[in-house]
Length: 339
Ligand SMILES: NC(=O)c1ccc[n+]([C@@H]2O[C@H](COP(=O)([O-])OP(=O)(O)OC[C@H]3O[C@@H](n4cnc5c(N)ncnc54)[C@H](OP(=O)(O)O)[C@@H]3O)[C@@H](O)[C@H]2O)c1
Image 1: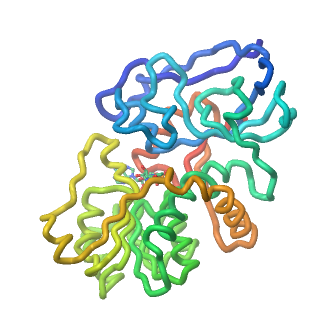
Image 2: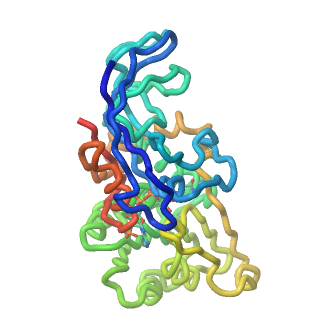
C-alpha cells in the first residue's frame, strides 16, 4: 500500500470557497490491477472552472469532460495533472513514463491505461502541457485563430491578458501581426505583457478610466474583443469595439465569484453595431490538440512564444492556489508542483 494525500471539499460553499471548506485526507493506494497503472503526480493545474465545480451542485450541461461534473463532497476533487508512472500492469506503459490525466488534487492513484494520455518528450517542460501547450493554450488558439480569425489588420483587446489563456491569445495575435492591447492587474503583470510583445498595456488597477485608456490605445476602436473576466472591463471594451467587431466570450470569471454577468447596455447595440458574438468552448477544439501541441512546442523552442507559470509547492497549498487566481495573484498558468 502507498499513502497518498488528496484534497476534498467538506461542504458546498454558497459563494467563493474558503480554505475551511477544504480538507486534506490520507488514503491508501493498493498496487495496480491488470490493465492499470499507478501514477505519482508531478504537477497539477489550478483553473477557474474548478471554483464552479466546487460551488455548483448541478452541472448546467454535460461538458466535454462530461464525466467531470460538480465536485462531490467527501471525494477527491479532479482536474488536469501530469504524473509519472511508478508501477504498470498495462501494455504500452512502463515505469518512468509521463502521463496526463484529470486526476489532480491527489498525490498518487491507480487508473485504467485508457484514461490517461502518454506524454512523448518533445523538449518542453512537462508542466507546459497543463498551460500553454495544453487546454488553456488550445482555448486561446480556438478563440483567436479559429473563431475570431485574427489577421494583421486587427486591433485586439484582451482581458486577464497576463493569465494562462490571455497571455497565449496576446502572443498568437502578435504572431499574426495584429495590434494587441492587454488589460491586467498590477505592475508585474504589465511588465510581463510588455516582455511578450503586447503593444499597449492597461494596468486596470492603476488606471482611473479604462475606457479612456482603451480609446488612447485604439483611437479607431478595436476589431476583436477577447473577454476572460466580465464586469467593467467588458463594458469598457464594448464601448470601443468597432462596428462588425468579433466579440469572443471565452470566460466570465467574475461569475465564479458570484456576480452574474449580462451584456452591458441595450441588446439593440449588437444589431446596430453588427457585432459577431462568439461563444468559445475549448472542448470544440480538442480534436486539434495533438497538432496544436506540436506546433506550440516548436514555437516555444524557437523563442517565438514565451510562457510563465506561478508554481506553488505541495498538495496542501492547492486550495490556496485556487483562491489566488480568483484574486488575480497568478501570472501565467497557476500550478501546484508535488515534488
Ligand atoms: N471557454 C473555455 O473553454 C475556457 C477554457 C479555459 C479558460 N476559460 C476562461 O478563461 C478565463 C481565463 O482562464 P485562465 O485559466 O487563463 O485563468 P488566468 O487568467 O490565468 O487567471 C485568472 C485571472 O483572472 C483575473 N481575475 C480573477 N478574478 C477577477 C475578478 N473578480 N475581477 C477581475 N479579474 C479577475 C485575474 O487577472 P487580472 O487581475 O490580471 O485580470 C486572474 O489572474 C477564465 O474566465 C476561464 O474561466 C474558458
